[in-house]
Image (tube, rainbow, N blue to C red; front, side, top):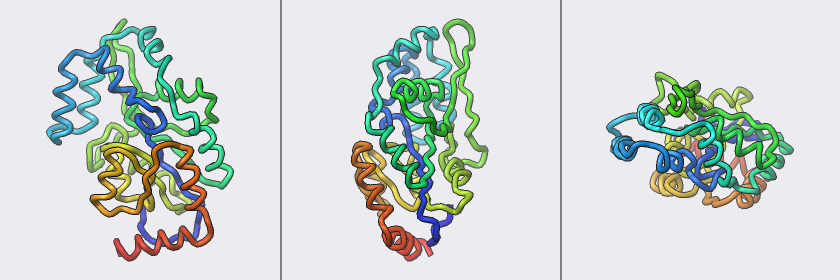
Length: 239
């Protein structure tokens, strides 16, 4: 993703799911209830950079012991931000392109979005494959061998593929899986650990805790002249 001024004001938006669109981290919730205790050590190993997030999630998924019915039942009471659908409609009405990029499971993400009545949206994520009656494996169609962080879903690649029109990139997220793409993006709507990261690295960002606020901030970002100021600041910082 180039960090230089561009003329196209119609942003490409790369949006996280767990903890961002969904209030909960859905994958962690499934692991806490259905996985063998070893999943927590894998999580610690990933946090310590001893293993990649892709290897971590693949091994954690293999520790799940649940039926398809249990999976479906578990996600029934998971809620997504009710303002997300409105944010998506607004973004598209302003010729912005939104793509959900997540290391979560595609089946779960689409089920929750569909249940909430969200308009169709592109999803780049992992997916789970049944391996017997109650065991699972992980599919990673959006992982990349060259990914700097060894992610199960390389969000930087998702962002790059989505910017063929040379549009600026806006990242919306909350956690460690968003760090790499946020560092390369033109602007970030951040919360949680991602907000701390943006502050530490002095990345161009604003704190956004829900999609009602995100719509307000996107409205400001789309105002005439604001993009030019943002692009000039990045050009001065990165050259």
